[in-house]
Length: 225
Image 1: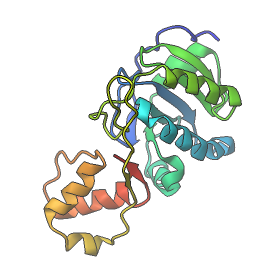
Image 2 (image 1 turned 90 degrees about the vertical axis):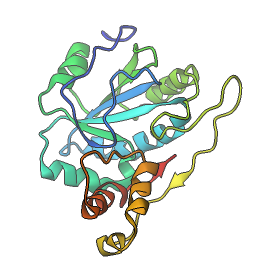
Image 3 (image 1 turned 45 degrees about the horizontal axis):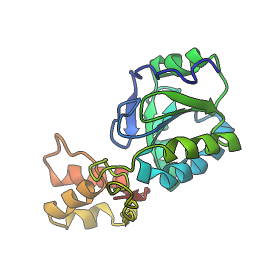
């Protein structure tokens, strides 16, 4: 494997459509970068598996980024939203192909789904099909070598210092309220919903904008804090 054991090149050109934008590689913990497309049946099968891995290792600061290899269209965003908790991790679109060139091209692979494991030091440790047993084994190893996530880790499970065990995550279930019900709540309550889930509100001034963002980002996804 050409990239294994080498520093991950900086990944640029991504448009994040679910979750907050993250740097790749991350210095806060390990990273999984998985390439997929809506037309790829095996990619869809892998969504819940990747969500399970993301949840399992959140306490070690793991960030999972699903990178779509198509164009940023309303259809792609609607598809991701429809997945709900099946796709419980960060999602981005690689419309320019820069990310695919940096990882898929450098690794000389073309089939998808294909995922890369990058340790907290920025080194590529493994890549392959995300549902292969070897992939989960390598991710277990890389995450076991990572320090517990800090309390400021953007939704990751908070960990203690030294040998202390990571603190139990608090589950933030999907918001089931309608837009009308949200509009009847105080602005501070709407902001609290978004803040608890680590969702940015920059540029939002109206209550309706807050309600729409909650419906878009919080109605189908379970967050952890």
